[in-house]
Amino acid sequence: MNFIKTLKNIFSGNEVSRDEDPDTYVEEASNSTPATVEEDKPFSEPEPPAMRRVVRAPAVLEKLFPADDPDKVLIKAQPSITGDQCLFMLNRSLFPGHSWWFPTFESAEGSPLAERLFSLDDVETVLVHEATVTVTRKDKSIFDWKPLGAEVGGALRELLNERGALVSQKITDEMPSQDDIQEGIQKAINEEVNPGVAGHGGLITLQHIKGNTITIKMGGGCQGCSSADLTLKQGIHGSFRKYVPQVGAIFDETDHAAGMNPYF
Image 1: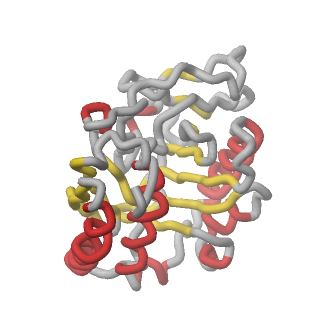
Image 2: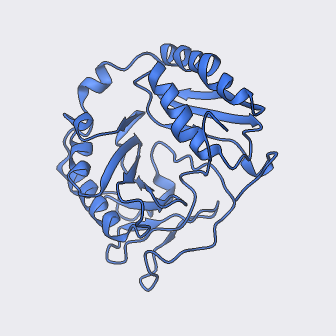
């Protein structure tokens, strides 16, 4: 596709664990209940890829963590199949009802959570969504998330224990209404996104909006297309944020395994 290329679900893939941290848990890339990290399992040891699915973490992740000590900050980490991103899920709400993408260190000004993470050497971008944080690393040649994952987990736990503000109040104050966001995203789809994928028989539809978090679905030639990941990351993300700069997380709930060109 000219407009964009591969949609591998960025939240499906190999497990990440932190052997030395008993408060960090691992979610497998399946629909099974997450298990506690085993001490003798290497952090970077690859697992056979599971069928693609959308990981939609709930607003507060009580069911993913043991309830024996609610005062502990618990973190689960799951890297993307491409290795460039890692999803950190917490048993704490970070930005209730909203999400925010920090593409640069400068964009993190006034938001302690993002400022703390950008202080780590290999952090390129940060996405905060309710009770999750997605970190993109600078060095795309490294697939082992153990060293950086330990640093991210430590920074998150330290910041949450301080019980201070996490995201700049200015971001919340300047957030457009959900209706305005929906109008802008639909305009982007109609004027730019769908004309770009139409030549390949593709169709993008807006499924849900919650706050400034967007869920889309790919149809036609885009469903199961091996180019879907770049379509999402380079095309749709850019177009949506051009029309509505305050857009946060963007999810794809397409069942690509059932598409015209399914891939795993």
